[in-house]
Amino acid sequence: MNRDLARRAADELGRRGLAAPARLLADAHRPLAPLLADVGAALGPLTRAVAGDRAASMVRWLEEPDALDQLVEALDTPGERRAGPV
Image (cartoon, rainbow, N blue to C red):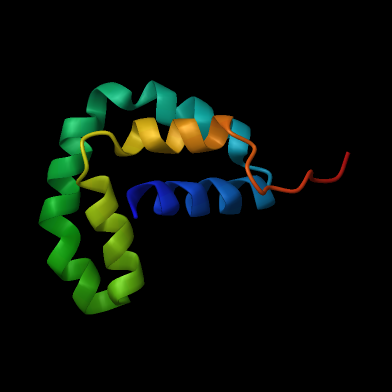
């Protein structure tokens, strides 16, 4: 399930033309992964109450210690993404 969320996030970023900046930011913020996991754990119940289960699943994914690594891997792997306009 975690890889699926990373793949969906990477596909959406690619569709919007933000794959390269997202890859750069995710790579730059790898040292903050433990802090992001703590923030995800703290905001999980609030997110679920306000935005529903779909947003809460993304927050739960951030709680994983290797979430940024999964996102970087998904951004590096083309997968099912279509090429954007040239």
